[in-house]
Image (cartoon, rainbow, N blue to C red; front, side):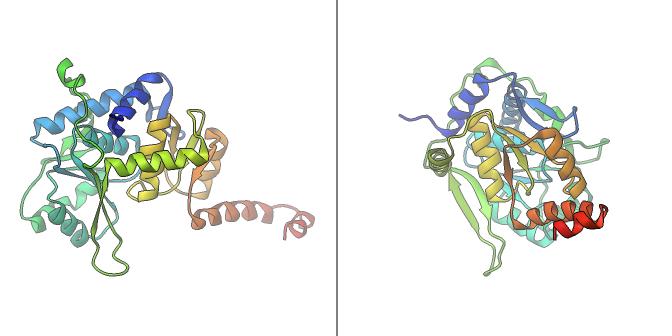
Length: 290
């Protein structure tokens, strides 16, 4: 029997424990090796199980790009639960509808989400465990992600084979609704494996790649590249502190990516940065670069 996606991830993590896995470019504090990622993923998986999350249950993930987003995502998949990534800037009504439709049992959140999540739960008609990363202070009703990620788990839990197989659902992606009511699109563990095999036939990726993330992680494209490809092949992933021309320019110099995950709008940022610089130069140079 071929190995599942999660089994392949464990092999990948264990084959390069000391290599850098993910980081916020320009921040030493938010840098993780593959061994550190693996340990935290296992801890989060164990805490989810302690919360009563079972195989096939849905777990919401609402937040800006960060390595902890990835830890929550992969920790959910490791116990056979289904991750539900949502737009952190979505309308409250939309987020509530997705939580109702998905029947999410737990929500992982970035700090900004704490400001209005009480209203979401009010509309939802129930409360769910809310786990927040980088929460500055104790806030009633919210748990610290860092506590979850530091949970000690028994050896027998670490030795378990991840339960999900090819036909089992891994991700529930919601459409943008541009052509009607947004719908939940299920992606299976088998879909992930097929995507990985297809991409590698063309790109022949290795752990020498450095991927700079320029799009939100709740988008399918970024999940394919950052959550599936990078973790399987051991590529280092860098995230920006914020998406601005200056931060992008700094990241290009410091991180030196070999792969950029982007769309045409992002190339406009490159163009703007270059030509803003040209405007400050001599008239001769400006004429040469028209």
